[in-house]
Image (cartoon, rainbow, N blue to C red; front, side, top):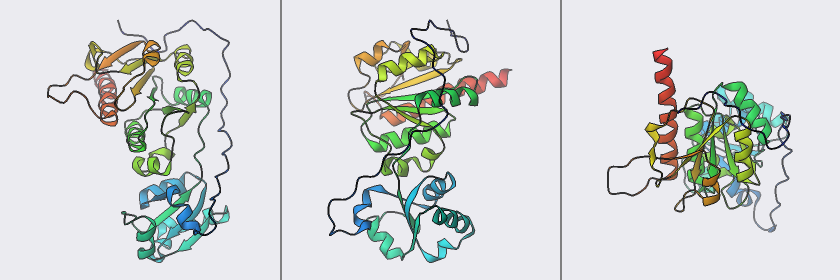
Length: 292
């Protein structure tokens, strides 16, 4: 039997009014060595590439510093945004392609790099409220201990591209929103809310009380993904690389589902699995819209 939209659930605790604001960012940790240059100290905080840096500038993301080649600085897409960022305290440095090659270790920087400030995570209540305002049947991704920032970045990118309303990650023993995540997400971090929570189990129960149905993706589940009708507010829980969903997390899911495989490979990369599951959810909804 398929759940209806926002099926009411028994509330275990008083409802809380959502707070439509983000917490204040924490101050970045200062480098200990005074002998290294600021550019070397900030190497781990670098994002680069035109699309990634443009997305950060357009979203008013605080940037400490931008390194850009002369030709690109005066391009129409960058000129106004850089002027606004400079007015807000961002340092703008004109550098050569060679210097950017050194800073990014030869990566494809396309003539621009930036040092990002710490990501300002969304409050969970605000994320839920925004998801419901955005879509009658919102879809959220919950990452259960995903440690590889490349996987987290790929999941964020896919979630935003397929129209999900938010991503939730745990505070401990998991990747955070770092410059690597931003680079892999290719601008999606600026377009989709991401919340970081202390207690994942409690968060799942809160989402149930808010009308969401919780589906955990597990290769050991008896029911296949395509056998489930995702016609209500949905939370898709993805497990950690290798170990998958924790037992405690599984107990807080309404249902476990699997992706049927035909080859000899026993499992999929977590970001690939997330993409396939998200596509199935939206495939079903697109078909329902066509039938209507």
